[in-house]
Image 1 (cartoon, rainbow, N blue to C red):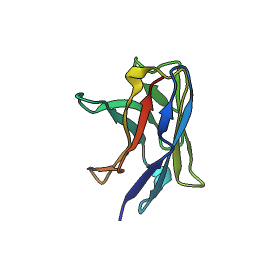
Image 2 (cartoon, one colour):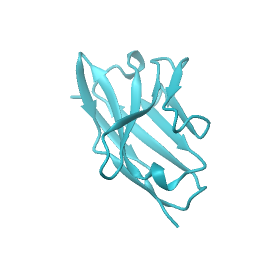
Image 3 (cartoon, rainbow, N blue to C red):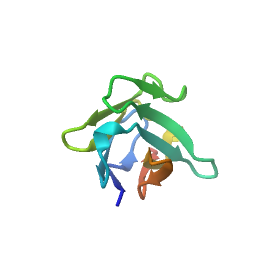
Image 4 (tube, one colour):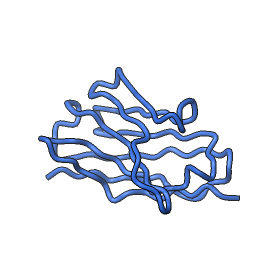
Length: 116
């Protein structure tokens, strides 16, 4: 079955950096777009970044453009989110997502807290 497992979250000071990882299994990873979403306290879940199946196209939410970078390694079935210049408003649970056979799949999420 499809599994997505995020890791790499934690507590970081404003201006700091983190790299999130998502390990995927149970489907042909290299055939699918991968997404990172986040849900902050009291907020709706929002799309942060997406990457095409072969990694030649990426797109970002306006709030993270120039600070976050999504990438993937199809040989390892991994997708990453490099986050730089973090702000308190980036505090959220971050989720890896894909749509496989018209059904959305989610990981358990990883908490990112940006605070001094």
